[in-house]
Length: 286
Image 1 (tube, rainbow, N blue to C red):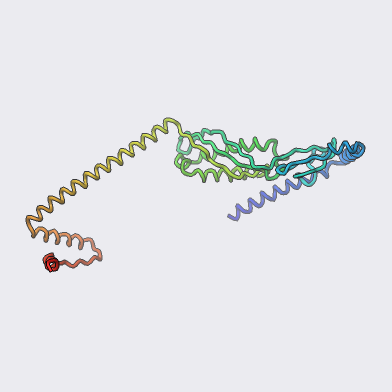
Image 2: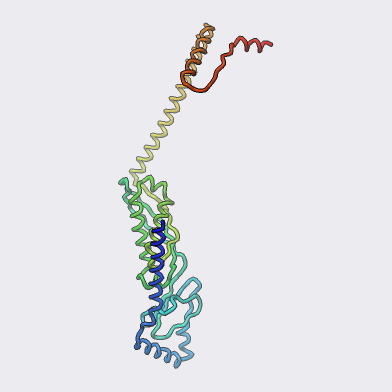
């Protein structure tokens, strides 16, 4: 457990270092870069107030802007929401949507651990957690997350058998979410939730499972009939035994003694006091 916590802390530390390096990279533009920046500022001042409309930009509440100055990310990282200022000619920016994005995982043909081919699809919820990393570390974070989700789904389901896939969907979804979140951490992506939507079995397997279920139902029905017939035969045997005992009153006493012998052979702690039936009849008559 301590090893896992240390590994997570190291990953977070490395991510912060990379982000800090990206956000502080504008100090390395060199002398020529600073000359171009000064020329851009001068051009802006000479073209006032027309240049104001080109320099002032707006990003919405759910967006962040990554500003590039001469190809390097501007110090301070993402800007927004609200107004921000750029220089003409030397600055450009990219808007990043910070809202939660959902996408469907296309049905994947997966060979399970017990060699059964199933078609599984799902849905993934994710959002951009760090706009700077999402722009600087990967070309297209959305497309990469989609492809990684498909691969992760196949890899996770390949280690499960059919019964586990049908019964442990929540556990599979949790494992996928943890794997995706760890893999996309360097891209500034936070995978919030993964859900397994549907598991489609081959038609032949569906027919075989339906036939097996029907056979089980017929077997249970047959067992119920056999049990009912057994009860009926037992009641008939008890009736015949009662008629025999009624013909010979001493037979009941012998049966009573045989029952006591059977109980005593089981070595239990039950104590039985024999009580003559004639005594009870005397109390009943009174």
